Length: 483
Image (tube, rainbow, N blue to C red; front, side, top):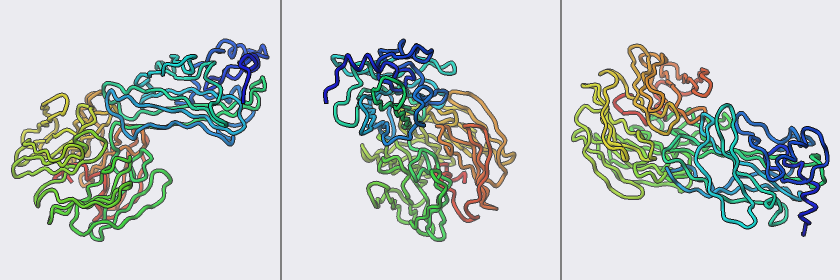
């Protein structure tokens, strides 16, 4: 179908008015709204992607509610996790079978609403894409959007644009992409156009206890007596149960197949065998480790998959069966140390680390930044290392049972302390609200209640889920001796 470009320009510059995707087409009214449209005739204005603090174009294109048409806008080609400096192709598609022209706008931000990464646009003649900068709540954001030459469909019923997002040099936690699109009828006014919005997130690493893949950790327990797993799905609140394991097994969930979902997995100390039910690639059984070892799951090679790994307290050796490199053995630690693995330097790889109660010292062998040691905590504290400030780095942290206080040495935000919990509670820090930060949380076995302090809004909630004999799944990532 051929469309005269001169006609498009003359009748549709109004579409750009609200900027989420408005394809630039003629100016037929002299209202303030249309004056704004004229000013952005070469592309939409900024800050209409429906991201936090932003609006969408239905304030101008008000014929229909947002996302009420038969079409959609989608963001594709994003991986589950990103690595520092990774170049990731991104495709935005606006679809609607009866639309004539299409437009879009996209931005990527972190949990604080700040811009993340940069963009590389393809070389095209004429140009179909451009970048603009805008400010939202004091934060500068960069936007990718169509140009006047990028509004015509290349196939019936949809239009796609592809460009490259360049990840930052260091991980910053969860990155969220927001996009808005316009499927326009080209009738010379803002009326009759459908506005669509969408968002998609990628992470700096696997979220613990995330069985439904929604980017939030699920409240979940493993029942050793029967080998059953029970989880309360954060996506819809439904109960999910799965029979996998036997009495005496230790739960070791992780994303072993790299699909963004936690897999059911147990380690059997009597035989040293790992049994894994992968969500994407099915069942696996791997012999790795021996009786007396402590399982220390993590992604040690940074390929987005959880590796089989154990720490041997008798000689302080870490044994890893890395999914990309095979067997790696490293001596790091001594008798009495508690393993405290995590990504302390934010490079996407799990680092070897121990907490030595006798000297209250953390020893960390970072995969990128090398060795470090810090004195933090006391001899009876439980290490609860996690990313509490959302910068993609594991923070040194302890839970003190004697007074129920959490002490943090955050890599970005520094020292903090929060009273939350009681002496017999099990610490279960995890990102339950999906904001890219681990939340303070405890499991009270005496009454089977979870108490969670959400970092997104500092709100508190409790949920009864489990019994006294159950093992809370998020606690499996904390040193065994501290449970």
